[in-house]
Image (cartoon, rainbow, N blue to C red):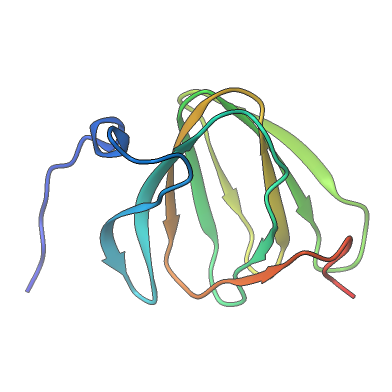
Length: 121
C-alpha cells in the first residue's frame, strides 16, 4: 500500500535535541529525516555503498567534503539554505556546519562510517 504524508521538515526538527535525528519515513534500507545542530564539525566520514544520498539545507549553511572513489583528491562544496546536494554512491563524505543548521536527508540505503584521516585506506 502506498503511504502518503504531509510533513513540514522545519517544524519536524523543532523540539529535537542538538544532533538528535528524527526519521520522517522509512525508505528502502534507509530513511528520510531531519536534524539540527550548531556550527561545528567535521562529522565522521560516511559512505553509502549501494545508493546516492541527498542532503538539503533547510536553514543555515554546510560545507560537504567528498572523497572520490578513484582515490583522487577530495572536493569541498558549500551548500546554503534552500540548496541540496546529491552525494554519489561509494564516495566517502563528511560535513562541517558553518552556521546553526537544520538539514533534511534522504538516505535510501545502508551506511558505513569511519573516523580515519582518509577512510579509503
